[in-house]
Image (tube, rainbow, N blue to C red):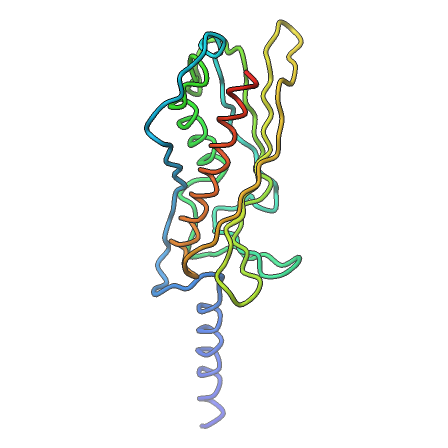
Length: 207
């Protein structure tokens, strides 16, 4: 009788251990979905004559295969990563970053127009991006760091031979205020704002 009862108890203990594992603290086991939002200062840049002539298309970003998951990605060791099953992005993170980049640059005034996807207007420049890193660094006992790295290329569409007008890798890291999904996503928002602020400045000189 004792042996028969021990197996269900062991299964319950194992199940609780699995459920309680994860990279962020949580109070329930209901799935939650998040988006990335970068808030730009309200005052737009004053476009110069040269910038008014630029028509920019922002292509959908790609992402490194390591980070290509909807679950919030946590780094727990030098080569150990974990995707959080219960906390995830609403859509693919590279799509969120593409959309926020397009919105930010449209508000910036660095060019005449930032085209929406599917536009029939011919752009003078095309921006391409690759998300190289997007994870919460949970190594150590302290609060996690939100890490973001994005590689950007700007292509000048000159006739039949497009040329790279500008390229740069942007890196940002911000501390989360707690070991929670909400705090990690908020820290990623700050990372994205830093990256886009630097990108806006660079584009104002490169276009």
